[in-house]
Length: 444
Ligand SMILES: Nc1nc2c(ncn2[C@@H]2O[C@H](COP(=O)(O)OP(=O)(O)OP(=O)(O)O)[C@@H](O)[C@H]2O)c(=O)[nH]1
Ligand SMILES: [Mg+2]
Image 1 (cartoon, protein in one colour):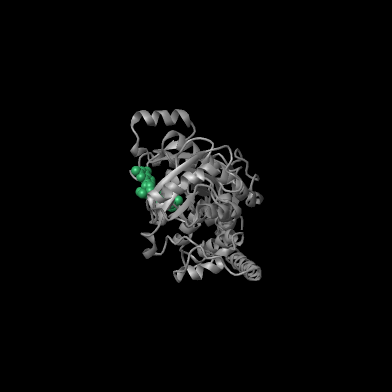
Image 2: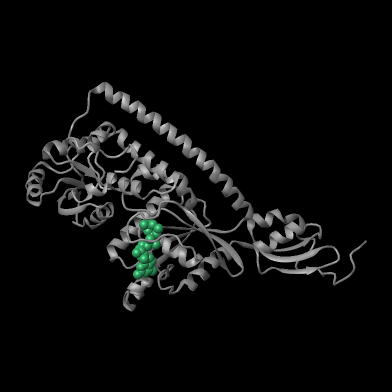
């Protein structure tokens, strides 16, 4: 666990000396299927080895123990055989399930998927805001599992990982401390957010169209940002590499666009993280266009699950209504047949490779087309004294037509609707068909 004090009590993947010691046994209660590869990948990212896995098919996880009684007996034997020293469940456990399962297993601690994801976030957080957000999420998670806050000191000291803490009174005190800390974190995040609002207000005044990259973790969002904008955002083949949003500019057909890359999503994304990362995720909800990036090299079923997981999170954070464009990334890994199949299945999508650059031009054309559709043609007569507004118009539409006339500069441009409204007072005196006085002297 990292330096934040909200960490899970018995799971220490990010301390290098502890890594080799973590041998995880993966468990899941699923209605069907037996794929635990994503949980394994999460553990790999957290630096934990997977030494075995077990799935129980059931409609719902057991409400008290996650797995059923008989399966737990089977699990005990498997744990011995594989020499596992931690059990990791593929679902978030209720505190009761976690406690009971641990009791039933005897001396092997139980950790859930949420704790693993929180650990990865804690390890990957870089910015002050990111660290605050992760700590908030961990505290919210641990508030329900209060043992964490006071056993973590014992853990670092190498004490018995299963040690139960002191009595009720201590728990109450800790709860209050945790709540105080949560309130303080929220205040600090509000402060960070107000700074961000100022920056955003500036951007909105400039009215540059904004594009947000959203998608499953490891889909290639950061690689695509780099390819589109020439940025050098860090890229890695691991989950949740990017936590902090970064925005860069891109030029398409004489227009400047802002492109934002941000935190990736995953199936069963912990709600504590969705809440704590509200300010970060707002970047996505405010964009004019969302590019939903998916790793098209994933097997069909996995691809569908990833698409759905992202759609669900987007709906959850209130980004349901915006223009959306599906980007099938990593097509350099696909043969022609698979490419055809995908374009048939996802007719509206653009298939690209952020690494080879293949078909990025086509993506640019599609992005521009989305914005073109929202633009209004205006015909303005701007007084000469409004030099600053003229400059602004040039910035907004690099391809506008201008002509100096006796009474001002005639400008024909295509502008976003809200911007067009701001220039309305110079409009229409000059209908598109009205004659333009040619080169005459200005009335003195
Ligand atoms: N072959 C291939 N690999 C790609 C492509 N785009 C990205 N990758 C690889 O996929 C991995 C993840 O890329 P990132 O850009 O970090 O992915 P991300 O969506 O930003 O991931 P997170 O920030 O972790 O959510 C890296 O190893 C990239 O090199 C592509 O078009 N083709
Ligand atoms: Mg990234």
